[in-house]
Length: 308
Image (cartoon, rainbow, N blue to C red; front, side, top):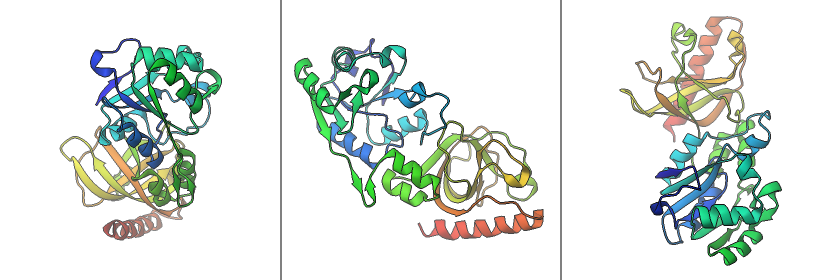
């Protein structure tokens, strides 16, 4: 997959794509259905998205809401067979374009797209003034086809990033996975910790969740992919997500214990999939009680993961 970030300088081989447009946070089943419609066009299969997310650009101090970072999004899109990722820098110049200017300058003249697919609720241009019907009209004038995708409905209503965030906030990772079409994952490098887990017999791989929507704090059964290094592979485990109240932690993170693993993971890239919520965060009267609870958590997680 080729990643293009500047629509004003395009190699000829990156023009003429059939593209799905959107933010694609989570790359859920609704997003995947839009991408599938783009497969029907001529030329390379592409996705047009923005970085930073426009919501981050306009409200930089708002609480984190993203389900995944841009690298995880790119990896997920590559797995779906996307050949061109137009990850445009969302800045003041791009935000100031009127809907017609966006259609002309970016889609037609800049990227030379032949076919674009958008959801029925798609809005674009300065002040989100343009809608999917406007884009279809501009396409007729400017020479690109437009397909408007109907919104995907799941068992409990519309599949959306908002509904997935709600499920994760409520400790329902399986419901989130049903809308995503895959487990919700937290990706990133292993960072240094205080090594308390090692002293307790439960060494953990610590990862930051900065910038991401925080799922419900507590303990989870997890699937772990070590993506690089000598221990690359797939593992089962249990993870604690939150602020470590037993040790007066402040900054939320995720600490993952890999079952039947021995080795050093510092600096390795991990992908931790949340499978089932086991219990909320809590404090204990003694380290012995804390360790007994971790034993019970791991036993339960092993049983859950063995049944997948």
